[in-house]
Structure formats: structure tokens, C-alpha cells
Length: 185
Length: 185
DNA sequence: TAGATTGTTAATCGATTAACAATC
DNA sequence: TAGATTGTTAATCGATTAACAATC
Image (cartoon, rainbow over the protein chains, first blue to last red):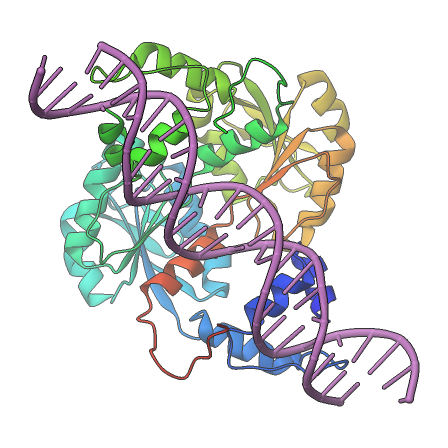
């Protein structure tokens, strides 16, 4: 059973068992795990049992795609607002939302009880948008821009940098040259 | 200078120096690094000096946003095709591209010399799309779906799972309970 | 020269894996 | 019982950090 999970997740059975040992949960030797309860305990530990409210800053192609993506709500992330600084898009409808201006960010974060801010702005305004979100009072940031943003330590940031991922992929695809490179040790 | 880089990247100066030591490149004590050459050596090592051709599978909200995103081309990733299995979208224009059917994937990958396939399909068809891309001959996959895809070892896969990133963020935001949890060691 | 910054070695840390006694 | 699978301890691995001699 730990072997099945491992295979499906691309890990070893050892890692699976090790990780599960952190949960308040036990399997039964030879019988495996009680899937229903495992599911429940895991989702509880990961916080998937409650809904998180998310605001998006940036209503360009990416922001719009995120706002329209139905997968978030299925996973317990409710998109409750989308913001942009450009008068050209403020007021436009995206799905069931209306694009609001950055001036309204603070109030909206407060009244909608937004927990998370998603950065979907161009790289050069990432820091500014991050600052605005932190001031507005979100408790975490998902950064989709290529920029590294500086925020207070109490606000965790997770980076989801697609271009960086592409670079990593390219690097792993590249046949490593076996000469001409120095090794540090 | 290594301190400046470290600060900007959110690392320690030690890590920066360690990492740079893998390059065929040296700084000068007290003077720092020759930025122009560093830039060149780095981009060379990361393969950023040549263009990679990318095809997108899935022309939903996400696929469309990716196709329209101008940041890729600026970074040397040329979107050279977008594919979908649904007759409803085949033939539509997205930017300068036309959505093609999956039947055309193999030929297009060959004639466009596509290196990378991006998975932007719903989770339940991720494996199928991955298989099609591998058969078509791409050399690497960027997986934007929440699914774990199985592919031959010679084809690297990088996962860019936004929902997983959101879960990680939520986990880091959550005030850790100090009791009721078992520690493994 | 003296102080600062590099490159490199050694120490630390966390995560993954291996090994195996306990258990069904 | 015998074989398989779990939970847990110990070993391995790679990445990050600390420390410091070399150098400008």
C-alpha cells in the first residue's frame, strides 16, 4: 500500500511511510491504510478542510486566466477579487468578478477577509504590488512573477515562477558537457 | 558584491560564491565581479543563449494565457504551437497562432522543431497529453496540471503546480499547533 | 599596510533512502 | 506459521552555511 502510493506519487515507499509517520494516524501491517481516514487526516493537516480567500493583483492575460480557472474553487481557494492599476481594465468583468482599482485593495481585502494575494503583474511592478498586498493585510503571497519580492518575515511567500521552471527544464534537458567545467570539490 | 547579489536573491553570500564557483569564471577580491562577463557566462551555462521552441497542449484559459504571455519570448522561449482535442476550439486564433488538433501534434513538433511541451490540460487528461507529447518527440515537459505524470526517464519533467504551491503557502501561513502531533525523532 | 572580499574547505542541516524489528 | 507490510532508527545524500586562508 505504501508502495502503491509511492509509485503513484513518484517517490519511494520509505518516504511515504516516513511522511505519514508525522500524522496522527497509523496503518495496519499487511492491511495498509484506511483510505477514508487518511484522506481526512491529511486534508486536515494541510488545511484543505477550510476555504481560503484569494485576491489577484494584475488583470492581464495571466490574472484573467487565474480568475477564470475553476480548479481553485474545487480545491478550496475562493477567488474573491481581482485588481489592476490600469484604467483600461478597471471595471471590466472577468467571470463573476469585476476588476477593481488598487485604491480599493485595502478595503476589499478587509471586507472579503482575503487570506492570500496572488501576484500576476509584470515583473517590474511586482515589488510595488507585493507591498500593497502586505499593507492591505493578506497573510501570504503567491508570486507568479519572475521577480524576487521582499516582504516582512511574518508573511510567507511561495514562488511559482514559470520561466524559472522552464529554465530548470532546459538545464536538465541539456546534455551535460563532460569537459571544460570546474568542480568545486 | 556577493553580498549584494545574495540580498537581491534572498540568499546568503556564501551560497552565491559557492554557486558561482561552478562556473568557468572568477571574481576579483575586493573588486567583485565583472557583471558583463558574469551575465554572459551564466546565460551560457543555463542555455539562455539559444531559443527553445515550446508547444502548448490545452487551449483553455490557462493555455490561452500562456500563448498570449509575451514574457516567454523575451526570455528565449518561443511558443510555436497550441493544441487541443476539443473541436470547439480547434481552428480558433490565439494571438498569432491557430489552435490545432491533437492529430497534428506529431507533425507540428517535427517541422517546428519543438523542444518542450507544456501541459495546460485538465488534470484528468494530463497523462494522455504527456504521452502524446513524448510520442511526438519533445525532449522535456513543463507540467502545469495538478497530476503526477509518468514518462520515460530520458524526458525530464518539471512540475509547476499552482494549487500545490497554494497549499504549501497555506501550510506555512497556518499557526503550527504545538501539541497533539507526533514527532518521528 | 589594513581592511574587505574572494574561493574553498569543513560543518551543519534537512530530506530521502536503506535496513530491520515489530506486527498482522 | 510464513510472508508481507508497517513504523522507526540509522545511513546517505545534496544543499546551505560557516569559517578562514589567499588576495587585492
